[in-house]
Amino acid sequence: MSFDPASLKYDANGLIPAIAQDHATGEVLMMAWMNAESLARTIATGQVTYWSRSRNAFWAKGETSGHVQRLVELRIDCDRDCLLMQVTQIGAACHTNRRSCFYTLVENGEEKITSDPLPS
Image (cartoon, rainbow, N blue to C red; front, top):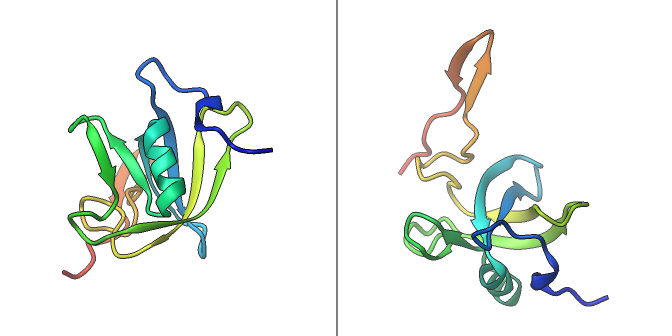
């Protein structure tokens, strides 16, 4: 069966959440938004491309930072309203220069930072 990005369930703004996971370690790196065109670009090029809501523009991960995500595998959840992308991450995934955006742990009612930014 061939895949059509239009077959997914997008929100009212035409967006779908996309979770990036390191394909080798399973570490969850980040969550961002995609639309049908950014997904089609990702599939066509292998470089993960998101839709930036703040810039209202396509965002090829790493185009300015060099912290590129290469798509290894794409999965669709059972409701067809969320994507899981297994990727090869070069450098930091987070804009704070950390490997993952999920570096804040809530434990016993307290927040703890679990990782430092990567060396520049």
